[in-house]
Image (cartoon, rainbow, N blue to C red; front, side, top):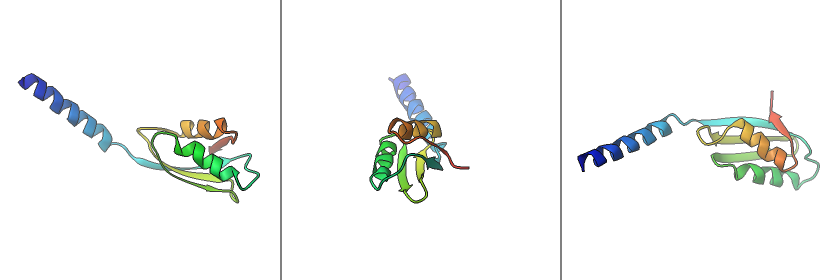
Length: 94
């Protein structure tokens, strides 16, 4: 039984350590094809369902989406794919 307990403790430690290296990141995406007042809601919805996304703010006027996410659960490529799949191609802002 002591080996099982040690294995469980090791697993918990490794899981906790990997979470300790997680970082909140924020990216601004330039979003194309936003032509109406409903478009930002669609863009926001496409991003909020991506695992690891914590916050999304979409600006119709600026044609941008500011996304805060957990970099251990998702990445910028997945965010770009989410908006593109919804009909709104995007790219990281310069």
